Length: 280
Ligand SMILES: NC(=O)c1ccc[n+]([C@@H]2O[C@H](COP(=O)([O-])OP(=O)(O)OC[C@H]3O[C@@H](n4cnc5c(N)ncnc54)[C@H](OP(=O)(O)O)[C@@H]3O)[C@@H](O)[C@H]2O)c1
Image (cartoon, rainbow, N blue to C red; front, top):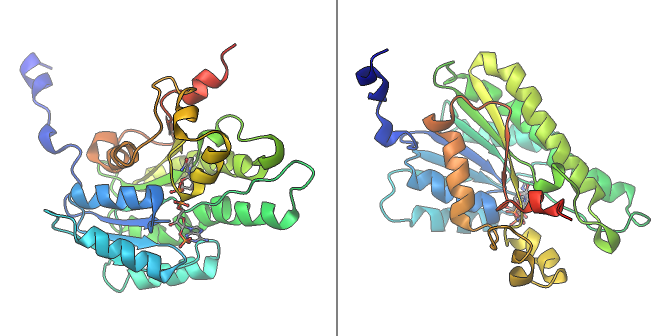
C-alpha cells in the first residue's frame, strides 16, 4: 500500500459516533448505567432503552435524559427485574413495540453483598449470582435475535458486560467480604469471552469492562467504611476515582466503530488500582 492510501482512514472524524444506533442499558436508572445512557444519547443514539426494577426511578432518569441539550435521540423507560428470565422476555417484548432491532446491549445491572466468610448465606449468594451472572447470559440470549437483525461481520452489533476489578483480582475481605460478588464478576468476564467466540462469527461482538471504584449508590457505603473518596484515592496510581465521563467514554468507545476489532476483552477502568494492589 502507498503512504497516501495508508493515511486515508475512512471517515475518521466520526469513528466514535453512534448516530442512529439503538441501545439497551440494564441498570440504567442511576449510577454507571445512567452515565452511559447519557453518553449514548450525546454520541448520537436514536433510541436508548433504560431498565431497572423501580418504575419511578426509570421514569425520572428518562426525563433527565430527554432534557439533555442538543440530542436527536430519545430515551425510553421499561422497568423490569433483570434477575428473572420471564422479566427479561417481557423487557424484550416491550422494546420490540418501538424498534425492530437493537445495535448495542449494555448488560450492566448488578448487585453486591458484604458479609464475613462465616456469615455469608445461601440466599445472598444466590441473589448476587442470579443478577450478575445468570441475568447477563439470559439478557444476551433473549436480545440476540434483535441484535442479529443488524449484525454484520464488518459492522458488528455489540454486547458490553459490566464486570469489576473484583472479578480480575480479589474483592473486599473481612467483615464485609464480597465472595459471591467477586466470583460473579469473574464469571461475567468468562461469559464475555465465551459469547465473543460463539457470537463473533454471527456479527455480534462482546466485551467486558472492569470498573474500579466509582462513587455510586452501590459503592458509597463501602467507600465510607474505607475512609471516604479522598482516602481511597490515595491508593490509586492516578490518585482519583472514576467519574461519569470515564465510564461513558469507555462504553461509548466499546460501542463504536473504533472498537470493532476488540472481541472478548475485559478493560479495567480503575486508574491502575488493580496493578498497585500487588505492590510490596
Ligand atoms: N460503582 C462501582 O464502584 C463499581 C465497581 C465495579 C463494578 N460495578 C458494577 O457496575 C454496575 C452498575 O453499578 P453502579 O455502581 O452503577 O450501582 P448503582 O448505582 O447501585 O446502580 C445499580 C443499577 O442496577 C439496577 N438494578 C439492581 N438490581 C436490579 C435488578 N434485579 N434488575 C434490574 N435492574 C437492577 C438498579 O436499579 P433498581 O434498584 O431500580 O433495580 C440501578 O439502576 C454493577 O454491575 C456493578 O457491579 C460498579
